[in-house]
Length: 184
Image (cartoon, rainbow, N blue to C red; front, top):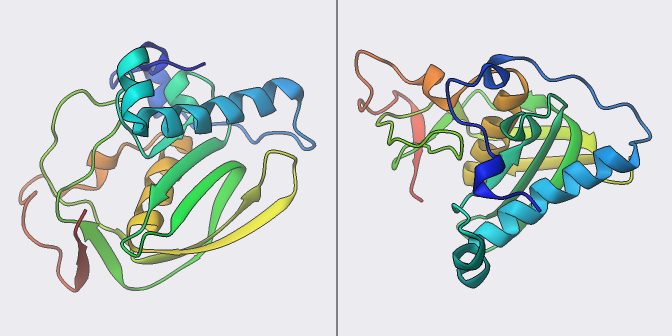
């Protein structure tokens, strides 16, 4: 089981490296890693389990954040309509996206960043993601708003990109022109 102590923090060189594709079919070890990523985000959202194991709450986690440089992400998030998006994916890719941008009005946070980073992060408002599930079966997901933002954040980790790399350093809290503000 992954704990908060297993998550590497900003400044660690692995967070700035591109992760490798996962060979298909996935190995038992890769499946276990992917499963543990999803287990962490689920457990971190359960108040009792989080308190018992000292887990910091999160809605997404990428393998590079536990110092595994492989293309794996887990997301467990509910949209504004209450629909749950719970996915553990190998080799996720954005295959299409909207022209329209969106951003979280509260800004973004990250389990690998222990400090608040004020600023709006421009993201695509809608994305289509392709990847492989835990058994190596192809998955295609259309996402918008918060779930789309979370998947983009986690896929960035696979490419060595941190959320604050997208923030306008001169005007971090200036609303992003023609972008949809998303409340969280």
